[in-house]
Length: 354
Length: 228
Image (cartoon, rainbow over all chains, first blue to last red):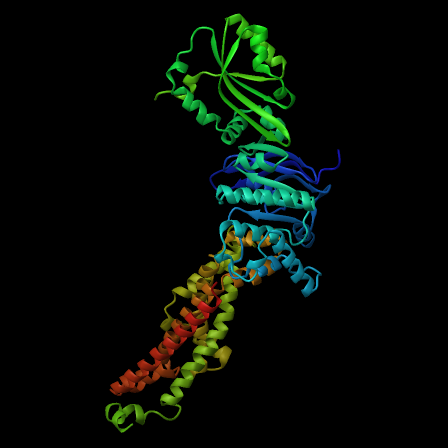
């Protein structure tokens, strides 16, 4: 594998104050390859923002190394670090535009100190505003823009020095769903067009699902799970990851709804409520049909969902299997062998009637 | 004219010359403008030091912050009328005299810059931390952040603070009049009050008021101009 563009090695960040030490980031190792859209998810306080600030040293780690293109930037002196930062764009939840400057001036600000001539800078600004679709807003002030437009300006600004990396710190968290989608699409487009490596911090698994190819899940300063988005969605290993994934489907709500139904609360003997998850090739085979043909077990489908992630379908079904008890367990065996993941469900866990 | 002369005769009698209204107006202007410039520069610098050395700021430094903070607090706590007497010897060393408008400059500067520094601090501390972080992420130096983020983003608040400071400075120049600094304050006290020429006091007051209004008007106008 090629050398990762960003390598975080044994990164720890310890905030000391009088009362106690807070270990915001706890010995994290992370490799991010060029061209990745790398999602980092976690609830607030998980340390993801702190971790990502280590990449451009807005936050100095208390331990560990930050390698960009194989070089430890912690060793850089101030001027060299500033040069490096120019190649790492960053966008923020609250956009952080300068209110006293026009849109064009905000973008031009990032070009301060660049060797370009005045005319070249102007062309560059126009080109960037064109890229984010705001060429006509050039001379207005940020106050007059909507949230989504402000974020577009921030993106244009972050791209001014042709960075290799773009850090997005909860950049869509303050936006409505439709605007979020358009910003995510823009990031994805930039990733493809400019071969830009994007590090996407978010608590919205939906955003990761939409554009990332890799994801890391953080909890209490640690990365508890990582991998390709496909693997993580198909076979989550921790319950936190599972709960993040559930937020992107309607599974939780569905189960709660099902738990309200009387006939489901009292399953007949021989009936078994299960959740089946499968990905890729498995989805092409008619498993439900083969259950009946091979074992005489019928499957009553209560809920079904298929999503396409990175071109691979990921499915999930909630079914009631009914038939002879031994046949049902044999059929579950068969399903496992076919690569379907099985989770036995007990509706009582979803707080039926309250 | 004759009509006015009837009601404020002493104002006309005391109009010309260094010790009349002519002199007083120019002395008040002189004291206000010169000390505003000097105290402005010092106060801005001290205010900036407070802002950037504060906990979590770009040049965080507890020692420098605490020392500066204490100096500002102490100087602000001394009543101005006492400060005038207290620093007499220092004034003499710096400007060679303790009386007249020139003698008032040193105490005016020392009485004003800590006030202005606090105002500057309050104004600049409100500059969005996120914008500063954004500038840092773009590879901006600390000096660049002071010039093009703090001073630029905080400009409207800074002008508001300056207006307030100049007005309080006008107030101090009048107080300095009590110890022979000249200006409209002296005129009101020495002629108006001590010689029972009330009309002089009233007209001197009106002139100070007019001056304050003009300063406020200009300040508001510029603030509006630079706010977006």
